[in-house]
Image (cartoon, rainbow, N blue to C red):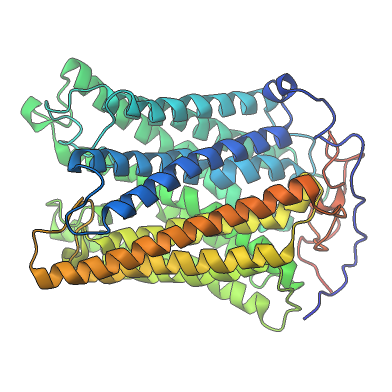
Length: 547
């Protein structure tokens, strides 16, 4: 159905004082404190590491085309999937939405000229670049083959004496500082710099999601930083913390790592929820259903995220009582997540839905993230997890949440705010076509992994020629299907990049408010003025008060 008219006039398009042409030259970008430019630099950087990690993923899939593995030796395969996971998680997925879209949008949405600490914001970006390059430098230090979780004793074994592991640990340690500083900046900005009339219960849901994420970043990331620092000290100086040969406890590392890393799952997915809330409300032209329920569910997810780390350790020897408690809490965290899904469905019900590219990605997200959530229920059940633990079922589940959730919502957000960021529109036909290719490629890739995992295919194996011929044939069929899907998915991502780059360079001019949104970022020009707003905006309505 066609879109209903907005009660608010669209903001004007393009301005000679826009942030893109206020100052020219590379140096002006590298020294800028403008949150919009910093957001774009984060965007380009994170997408660069996404490209590297994605190409590694396709190489891994090609290796698994045959049971014998004909492309890499097992040691190279282990190093490749470790670096793929490290770059994808720490250099792309965690910072993708908060650091790029968050930096660009948070001040605009609160009606401010910039974040609370502009210079600290720029330092956060350079710290991110330094950490990501040090992590990537593991390639030149002999790489690492521990898996992206750096589990002990793999990361402390004497046979792994190369500097690659230390490079990786220090790289992630540095990245953590960028995450903490960014989260701190967003918390202060939301608390102290809101426009007149922008009360807490008038905040856009994207801001609530970023706010909840920032709390996790500030509280949880130091735990990972200290854990990795202890691991470096153990390797360098023989301090016995995690290495059993030195009197340490390897399981203690898992507790520390997952105490951060499960909340980190919500650092990755909470901003995605915020993007989807904005896209569905705006493109359904309808007041969001259950605004307060979505707000409180975001905060509840941030809280519960600190209580469920033990479900990664059901087979680590922890007590049955502890496993039962963690299993119960894992099911409990699904409740606030389900609240969001049902609120989105209720928002679309009888809405004036515009079948735009962002809306199609939002619908794709709802389907794929729901699959990710439901497969997580199986892994949260103690008896089932014994069978599925460390199989490709876990890989499929993880990617349905992280890629089907975070990455798909990230793309939805890019298409939704791209006219605001660059002042130009993209081709709806080619953008929708790319969405279809991504959807087909993704599900072909990871449904196959869920199936082969349920049949017992272990993850992290470079070959699978040691099983019976019948099982080899079964695994090979699903691996080849998954590899084919990964190539289709890669083509889809390149199509997405092509449509957005074309729009930035040659697309038709966008109005200030092409979607008729009601939040503050749509009340400035496209692209925004250098200082965001000509005058301090005043808020007299809710962010989704559509008529």
